[in-house]
Amino acid sequence: MAKPLTIRTYVSVVLTVALVAMAAAWFVRTPFAGAWGFSVLIVAGFMLEMSATNLRGGDGAGSLSFVVYISAGILFGPFWGGAVTALSVGIGQIYGRQPTIKAVFNAAQKALAIVVAVFVYRLLGGELPPRFLEGAGTLTVRSIVPEALAFLAAALVFFIVNSLLVSGALAITRQRSVWRVWKTNTLWVLGYDLCASTLALLVAWLYLRFDGPDGVSHLGFLALFAPIIGAKHVYTKLNTLQKLYDELDGAYEKLELNLREQLEMMVKSIEARDPYTSGHSRRVAALSKTIATDLGLDVQLVDEIENAALLHDVGKIHAEFAPLLSKEGRLTEEEWEIMKTHSAKSAELVALFSRFKGNVLESVRWHHERWDGKGYPDGIAGDAIPLGARIIMISDTIDAMSTDRPYRKALSFEKVVSELIKYRGIQFDPNLVDATVNSVTIRRMVSEKDFLAEQTSRIKEGRRPNSRPALRSQKSFWEGLRSSVGQQ
Image 1 (tube, one colour):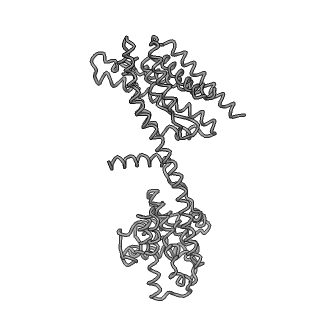
Image 2 (cartoon, rainbow, N blue to C red):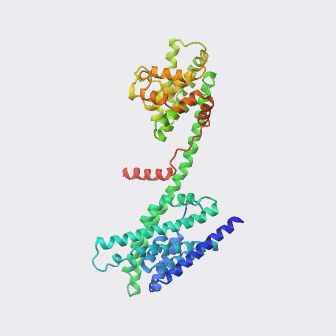
Image 3 (cartoon, rainbow, N blue to C red):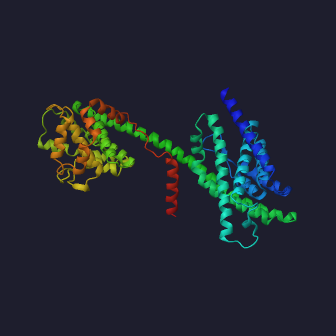
């Protein structure tokens, strides 16, 4: 019973504040504009209320009716603008058979938002109606800009008040934070709403042009529906596209999780052939991620290097490597030549996944290339070797030296550092060697097995902290939009 009581209390407070605001507006009201002004704007607002689209949060809905309400505010002032808004919304709610509490809240909060917005407009020096819409006198930049800025400020205030009040109600009913609801429903479209609010100036201008003494001339005011319907169409498409991107986000996350689980199975299959290298790929991935993070690389590049490190030996799943991996003695020269093909074969398997092409694929293929150019499979050298491959080369070597082998015990961190420095600028990138031997985290991972296991477990689980931007779907939308425009 707590939630119904809370929402009723919230609606009561909003209604009370709206009535107080309307009472204050009554004392500064402008003369009544007449039945025509009221009726046409109420009908226009009602029609747009009927074409509202659902918000991404679920229970709420949004429409372009605010264009009509803002135009009523700058034409008639805060009281009559609030009255037009309350009546239009109320009629729409009754027509839609909405619950009483919802109808009262929607009418009250929108009327309150308009009253506050118009008060702000007046405080910033805006005239009722704006002088530049009436066309009286000589129009100059100096006369237009102040009122235009006052209008934009008022529109912004309207959206903030309206969206916060709605977000408050949704937060109560859906038991979420107000900020989370506001960010989901409002943040991504706030810029568009602010731009669309300029249509209120067009609506007000058309009203003034067709506000003649004869009733027939008023019919021309119907022209306002053309731009509003056009904007409504864009608004609906924007909302639909955003939902599609949200769905793609969910599908992307599921695909990524499934893919990592499949790769984990492949890595486990390889390591099952050699108990001495069990967990090797995951440890190399953890070490590589740490080095890349210490270097301050971009989050996406860190993820790519981590994936490449996890997959660097995946080519060993081929049958020809099975006897070599299980062999207890040293490999013959012929066997070693076969073993050296594993990096290229790993790259071939990685190439089957389109999202791994690029940094991941190149890092896997060239993770055995040496700084001096004497590595394999292609003998490239220096900076020509991808950064990810150079990092994996060091991580691979560190893990090989710091874990037990049939022919020796694990080396200490000091001995590992000594070997890295010995081959600095020969086998390894000298700058990466310097960064690695000075890394406190790497020292702990090599010296403290429990700490290494903790870091490795994050790789083993196939789940990482979500590195996507919080608004990846919004980012995807705008990137997609720019791309489509560029192709036209």
